[in-house]
Length: 524
Image (cartoon, rainbow, N blue to C red):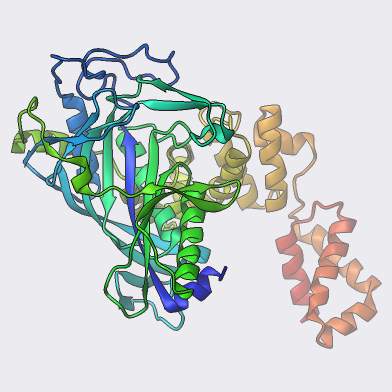
């Protein structure tokens, strides 16, 4: 198949997401008092309401309504005061009552948006950026110094209940295909679930991935879900179609169902864009269908022909009265809004002089943002001066360690904010080099000692005495007169040789900044 770049020269990809999020921080289900608990024994948290037994009546969970209003306010949505629930009818074993209680055309949250900062390699997927200048606007983006900012509309966020879980036995990879029989666990049935639907404003797989990541950050900050993609509390359906460049008419879309990782979302959309282009180039037809992304085979597989709204026979839920949210209720929820990731990043830039890039990456995860806050508190009066080196430490070393160790916990590990401040002070003062700083970071984790103690025990402290270093520099230059002449003749790359010789004579303890400075002075 063609590359994405080749496809996007002729076609425009139109992508929309449906993001499903379980409100796992609540104690009970959406319409009954059954306990929410992931991993419990199958069918131990069920009752006549979530099993749909005759005569059982639903009672709405007020805390769930508060959570969805929080989500709407955090994503710039209008909060609809009047809305209602509907019955979405379908026959499948994972929903015992044969219908799902969901919202209709008017949801609690309507007409929102999020802005995405797309930079680096992520920005390279977007067609038409070559030759653009900072501040240029086209389609839904504004060009920035290192990429672009994309405005992504949110159609709605509606409330519904989750279905149960099917467990297929005997097939490959736990899928229904080839299974000898299937089991159903209704513990999850009735779990409060919010579904966010975007406008078709996304144009690349990277934009879709970044949107999903940003939404996860927001929901975690709100505290409404644990957003565990591995456990299924955050999952996504990706809708994608192609149209010829210059056309405004939407093509036929396919839906990638139940994506449960950022990588799968990106790779699944990437494959589907390329697949659709191949079909269209050969004169074929794209069918509206639901497809499954198989990460092991790295391709999408047809699951079923996509249902339409008419297939679900939606009608108002007769057992639930319409909702009328008061101004007082909405304001009470607004008062609970915490500092959101974007606001936190702006504050880091304003208070500590960090670049937008550094600030944005610090707030990508709650753990790193909390850790950085702890560092700034420990640094006290030196906070602004140490903010940049600490940010580098967190974004590079700490994040790499967290990614490499699935069970790592930044709150309980040996590398505390106080020790991070101490390590930043050692590197900034020139007591140790940045390379040595990485060694000390790992030693702190392994030995549970302060950075200063490790530096002293290992004799790592750099020599910064200018007089002592100058004597070594003079000796190295005297020993290599031919190299000195070559350097002065234009081979300036030899500076690395001279620095290496000086460091060798000083057993690696010379301050490289001072060595470089003295060499440049004496060789000029």
